[in-house]
Image (cartoon, rainbow, N blue to C red; front, top):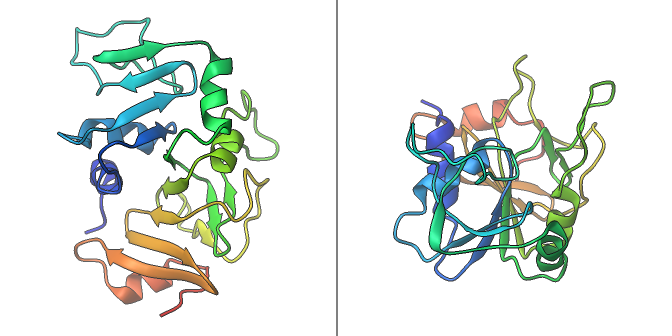
Length: 208
Protein backbone atom coordinates (compact mmCIF):
# COMPACT_ATOMS: atom_id res chain seq x y z
CA UNK A 1 0.00 0.00 0.00
CA UNK A 2 1.17 3.57 -0.60
CA UNK A 3 2.48 5.47 2.41
CA UNK A 4 0.06 7.69 4.33
CA UNK A 5 0.91 11.22 5.47
CA UNK A 6 2.56 10.08 8.68
CA UNK A 7 4.64 7.42 6.95
CA UNK A 8 5.81 10.00 4.42
CA UNK A 9 6.79 12.33 7.25
CA UNK A 10 8.61 9.52 9.06
CA UNK A 11 10.51 8.69 5.87
CA UNK A 12 11.47 12.34 5.46
CA UNK A 13 12.75 12.39 9.05
CA UNK A 14 15.19 9.62 8.09
CA UNK A 15 16.92 12.16 5.84
CA UNK A 16 18.00 14.25 8.82
CA UNK A 17 21.33 13.85 10.60
CA UNK A 18 22.61 14.97 13.99
CA UNK A 19 23.60 18.61 14.14
CA UNK A 20 21.41 19.78 11.26
CA UNK A 21 19.34 22.96 11.29
CA UNK A 22 16.18 22.24 9.29
CA UNK A 23 13.17 24.24 8.09
CA UNK A 24 9.81 22.51 7.74
CA UNK A 25 7.20 23.81 5.29
CA UNK A 26 3.44 23.72 5.84
CA UNK A 27 1.34 20.62 5.20
CA UNK A 28 2.83 17.14 5.47
CA UNK A 29 6.36 18.49 6.29
CA UNK A 30 5.15 19.85 9.63
CA UNK A 31 4.54 16.24 10.72
CA UNK A 32 8.28 15.53 10.44
CA UNK A 33 8.74 17.16 13.86
CA UNK A 34 6.94 14.18 15.41
CA UNK A 35 9.47 11.70 14.00
CA UNK A 36 12.83 13.28 14.76
CA UNK A 37 13.18 11.03 17.82
CA UNK A 38 16.54 11.15 19.60
CA UNK A 39 18.37 12.87 16.76
CA UNK A 40 20.03 16.18 17.60
CA UNK A 41 18.04 18.21 15.07
CA UNK A 42 17.15 21.89 15.45
CA UNK A 43 13.98 22.86 13.61
CA UNK A 44 13.65 26.45 12.40
CA UNK A 45 10.47 28.31 11.49
CA UNK A 46 10.58 31.43 9.35
CA UNK A 47 8.12 33.20 11.66
CA UNK A 48 10.90 33.46 14.24
CA UNK A 49 11.49 30.26 16.20
CA UNK A 50 14.60 28.12 16.44
CA UNK A 51 14.17 24.81 18.24
CA UNK A 52 10.61 23.68 17.57
CA UNK A 53 9.26 20.70 19.42
CA UNK A 54 6.53 18.27 18.32
CA UNK A 55 2.83 19.06 18.21
CA UNK A 56 1.25 19.44 21.68
CA UNK A 57 -1.18 16.96 23.18
CA UNK A 58 -4.83 18.01 23.19
CA UNK A 59 -5.48 20.45 26.01
CA UNK A 60 -1.82 21.51 26.26
CA UNK A 61 -1.82 23.94 23.31
CA UNK A 62 -0.27 27.39 23.72
CA UNK A 63 -1.79 29.87 21.23
CA UNK A 64 1.43 31.92 21.28
CA UNK A 65 3.54 29.01 20.04
CA UNK A 66 2.84 28.47 16.34
CA UNK A 67 4.78 27.40 13.28
CA UNK A 68 4.74 29.09 9.88
CA UNK A 69 1.55 27.20 9.04
CA UNK A 70 -0.28 28.69 12.07
CA UNK A 71 -0.32 25.30 13.85
CA UNK A 72 0.31 25.14 17.59
CA UNK A 73 3.62 23.53 18.48
CA UNK A 74 5.77 23.06 21.57
CA UNK A 75 9.04 24.61 22.66
CA UNK A 76 12.22 22.93 23.92
CA UNK A 77 14.61 23.93 26.68
CA UNK A 78 16.93 25.41 24.03
CA UNK A 79 14.26 27.21 21.98
CA UNK A 80 14.99 30.80 20.99
CA UNK A 81 12.78 33.48 19.47
CA UNK A 82 13.52 36.38 17.12
CA UNK A 83 11.95 38.58 14.46
CA UNK A 84 11.30 37.39 10.90
CA UNK A 85 14.14 39.54 9.55
CA UNK A 86 16.63 37.55 11.64
CA UNK A 87 14.94 34.33 10.62
CA UNK A 88 15.29 35.11 6.93
CA UNK A 89 18.89 36.24 7.45
CA UNK A 90 19.60 32.70 8.67
CA UNK A 91 17.93 31.26 5.57
CA UNK A 92 19.48 33.64 3.05
CA UNK A 93 22.86 33.37 4.74
CA UNK A 94 23.07 29.62 4.19
CA UNK A 95 22.77 28.70 7.87
CA UNK A 96 19.96 26.17 7.34
CA UNK A 97 21.14 22.74 6.16
CA UNK A 98 17.88 21.50 4.66
CA UNK A 99 14.29 22.44 3.92
CA UNK A 100 11.47 19.91 3.75
CA UNK A 101 8.65 21.41 1.69
CA UNK A 102 5.33 20.48 0.19
CA UNK A 103 4.66 20.99 -3.51
CA UNK A 104 1.91 21.29 -6.08
CA UNK A 105 4.28 20.24 -8.86
CA UNK A 106 7.88 19.08 -9.26
CA UNK A 107 9.56 18.32 -12.56
CA UNK A 108 12.43 16.20 -13.80
CA UNK A 109 14.84 19.15 -13.79
CA UNK A 110 14.24 19.77 -10.09
CA UNK A 111 12.00 22.78 -10.68
CA UNK A 112 9.49 23.39 -7.89
CA UNK A 113 6.02 24.98 -7.94
CA UNK A 114 4.47 25.28 -4.51
CA UNK A 115 3.19 28.77 -3.87
CA UNK A 116 0.13 29.50 -6.00
CA UNK A 117 -2.46 28.31 -8.50
CA UNK A 118 -3.46 31.06 -10.97
CA UNK A 119 -7.00 32.28 -10.39
CA UNK A 120 -7.10 31.16 -6.77
CA UNK A 121 -6.68 33.42 -3.77
CA UNK A 122 -3.30 33.15 -2.05
CA UNK A 123 -2.26 34.83 1.19
CA UNK A 124 1.27 35.38 -0.07
CA UNK A 125 4.29 33.45 -1.26
CA UNK A 126 5.65 32.79 2.24
CA UNK A 127 9.30 31.91 2.65
CA UNK A 128 9.60 29.12 0.09
CA UNK A 129 11.46 31.17 -2.53
CA UNK A 130 14.09 32.21 0.00
CA UNK A 131 14.33 28.69 1.36
CA UNK A 132 14.96 26.93 -1.93
CA UNK A 133 17.61 29.52 -2.83
CA UNK A 134 19.39 29.58 0.52
CA UNK A 135 19.41 26.10 2.09
CA UNK A 136 21.86 23.31 1.42
CA UNK A 137 19.36 20.59 0.48
CA UNK A 138 15.71 20.70 -0.64
CA UNK A 139 13.47 17.69 0.02
CA UNK A 140 9.91 17.73 -1.30
CA UNK A 141 7.20 15.68 0.44
CA UNK A 142 3.85 15.39 -1.35
CA UNK A 143 1.23 13.07 -2.79
CA UNK A 144 2.35 11.64 -6.13
CA UNK A 145 -0.89 12.56 -7.90
CA UNK A 146 -3.57 15.21 -7.46
CA UNK A 147 -7.18 14.56 -6.48
CA UNK A 148 -8.02 13.86 -10.13
CA UNK A 149 -5.33 11.19 -10.37
CA UNK A 150 -3.00 13.30 -12.54
CA UNK A 151 0.73 13.11 -11.85
CA UNK A 152 2.34 15.93 -9.88
CA UNK A 153 5.81 14.67 -10.89
CA UNK A 154 6.11 16.18 -14.35
CA UNK A 155 8.37 16.63 -17.33
CA UNK A 156 7.91 20.37 -16.87
CA UNK A 157 6.02 22.35 -14.23
CA UNK A 158 2.93 24.19 -15.47
CA UNK A 159 2.36 26.38 -12.40
CA UNK A 160 4.40 29.49 -11.47
CA UNK A 161 7.80 28.37 -10.22
CA UNK A 162 9.10 28.77 -6.71
CA UNK A 163 12.61 27.87 -7.84
CA UNK A 164 14.45 26.36 -10.80
CA UNK A 165 16.62 23.26 -10.41
CA UNK A 166 16.42 23.41 -6.62
CA UNK A 167 14.94 20.03 -5.62
CA UNK A 168 17.31 17.26 -4.55
CA UNK A 169 14.95 14.51 -3.39
CA UNK A 170 11.21 13.84 -3.76
CA UNK A 171 9.30 11.74 -1.20
CA UNK A 172 5.76 10.81 -2.19
CA UNK A 173 3.19 8.27 -1.06
CA UNK A 174 4.63 5.89 -3.68
CA UNK A 175 8.30 6.14 -2.74
CA UNK A 176 11.49 8.18 -3.05
CA UNK A 177 12.97 9.78 -6.18
CA UNK A 178 16.20 11.69 -6.70
CA UNK A 179 16.77 14.41 -9.29
CA UNK A 180 19.70 13.25 -11.43
CA UNK A 181 21.09 14.05 -14.86
CA UNK A 182 18.48 13.22 -17.47
CA UNK A 183 15.49 12.88 -15.14
CA UNK A 184 14.54 11.16 -11.90
CA UNK A 185 15.96 8.01 -10.32
CA UNK A 186 13.90 5.66 -8.15
CA UNK A 187 15.62 5.32 -4.77
CA UNK A 188 12.95 3.46 -2.81
CA UNK A 189 9.41 2.16 -3.26
CA UNK A 190 6.70 2.15 -0.60
CA UNK A 191 5.71 -1.33 0.60
CA UNK A 192 3.42 -2.92 -1.98
CA UNK A 193 4.20 -0.33 -4.68
CA UNK A 194 5.87 -1.81 -7.75
CA UNK A 195 8.35 -0.23 -10.13
CA UNK A 196 5.58 -0.30 -12.74
CA UNK A 197 3.19 1.53 -10.37
CA UNK A 198 5.75 4.28 -9.83
CA UNK A 199 6.45 4.68 -13.53
CA UNK A 200 2.75 4.72 -14.44
CA UNK A 201 2.06 7.53 -11.96
CA UNK A 202 5.07 9.61 -13.03
CA UNK A 203 5.00 11.87 -16.08
CA UNK A 204 8.65 12.80 -15.66
CA UNK A 205 11.43 10.77 -17.26
CA UNK A 206 12.67 7.99 -14.97
CA UNK A 207 16.25 6.93 -15.60
CA UNK A 208 17.80 3.62 -14.55
